[in-house]
Length: 345
Image 1 (cartoon, helix red, strand yellow):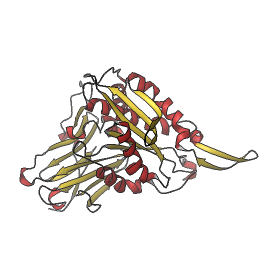
Image 2 (tube, rainbow, N blue to C red):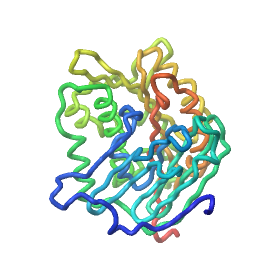
Image 3 (cartoon, rainbow, N blue to C red):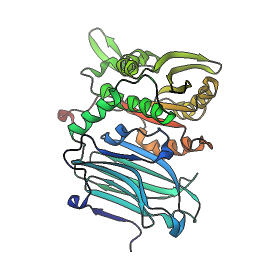
């Protein structure tokens, strides 16, 4: 058998829910502890990182992440000693036994766009590993599924039954912001425009602080329906945190999420992730954080592509893990650059 396998899945063999089902079948391993929201699986472009162990022949097969609807499938799981990633009619897999010794902690990353898939597997705390990828036919979730997801995220909530429900709500909200920020009619609101007379001579990305009001405006309705209090420019002993989000559990406890935004072209981008945000989390008494990159790549700006940093970012987040949470920080990227129109291609 070859080391890795790529094949197309016969969709007629999949166990899809019946058409009468009012929503998709969703299964997310409890170890994500709310850090992975179902909306993340519906993005046109995204990535998921997680840890696992190869327990040899005793390893339990099954789904790690699953979303199935009559017109959509997204699956990450283990079967017969392989880690598998399926999206639509395309499937990637890699053997667990070659990534590390039995019982050793492994890390995996899956990534996708509308026309591409990637699966990485390697030993924990090592950038070495094996990856397989493939091009696919354009694949996106149907509008009905996206609408279902939006309704789930906007259902009014007063208190949350547990931590998982609260964190999932926060990350659903931050994930939904992607489309709202990226699809504005006039992206110039994200830029400082420099003129000579009436002529535009250059555009430079706005500072993160100058975009906070836009972010809060975009999230305002969602925050209100979610009964989440937001504190902008929250002062801590470590400095000013961009946003502190606070919600209430049914047992009376209050949970916090620290949210920090940073331009991806900033020379302090990685320092913000591995030093600044964790320090804010300790100062604010929050176990969980969100690091939100603002990517200005496009017609008006060129720099290092954030995709080139995904392995580095994943390792950095995992290095911050503890006994409570393997991945205490969730990572988001919002593309604010001027898109290249067909006439410029």
